[in-house]
Length: 65
Image 1 (cartoon, one colour):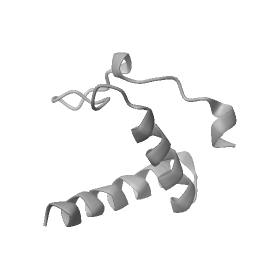
Image 2 (tube, one colour):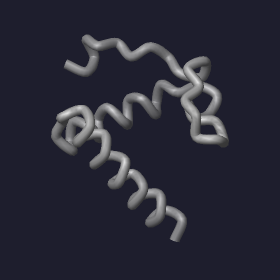
Image 3 (cartoon, one colour):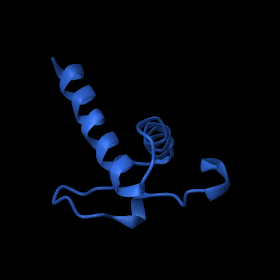
């Protein structure tokens, strides 16, 4: 049950990222997976849902080409 909920959440986030950034869902998924793999020490959102830039790494624009 847990994986189904996580999978559904990924689909929602992927759709939102694609819409906001003007990407295809496939490209948004690649971007999300790369971002997830780059995160160190957990999530880039703290428990209040605010963005915490200290927990992210810069995205190399050349990699997203």
